[in-house]
Amino acid sequence: MPPLLNEKFISQVREVLDAQLKEPVEVLYFGKQQDGDYDRNGVSADTRQLLEEVTALSPKLHLSTYDVDADADLARQYRVDKTPTTIFAARDEDGAITDYGIQFAGIPAGHEFSSLIHDMILVSGRDSGLEQSTRDFLKTLEKPLHLQVFVTPT
Image 1 (cartoon, rainbow, N blue to C red):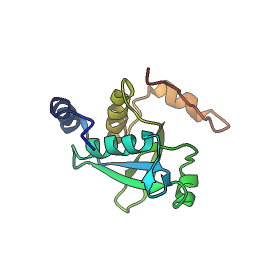
Image 2 (tube, rainbow, N blue to C red):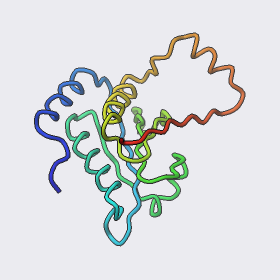
Image 3 (spheres, rainbow, N blue to C red):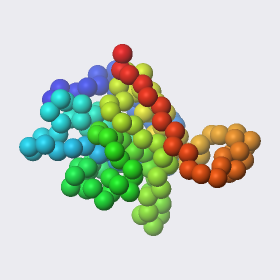
């Protein structure tokens, strides 16, 4: 497949990642394999290719790919219920993965590409950037909160 990102764009993204990534980021990709190839409509294949191209731009980014059927236990652990899904996490010194709850369902293209890069940088900093008052409020929540944001590529 031809590259999704052109050289000028790659240079710009690499510059941002080099300047702003602090700690390594684990990028977990979940797709659905069908008949030996990912996703017949191309969304999973394009998402995987995009993630491969982006994670290749920095040694601080590590991509792991999983099949939701073959890796069903892991998919359940990360609450993956759609494909393709991308999760951003961190690995500590002991190898344990911390899930920050940031997931993309579908391809992060168009305006969502900047969110993809921003989320990698956010996880790399190991801090949400939330104000202390917001953190204090979140501590008062008594039930888990499931927040989803939906966008379209148009």
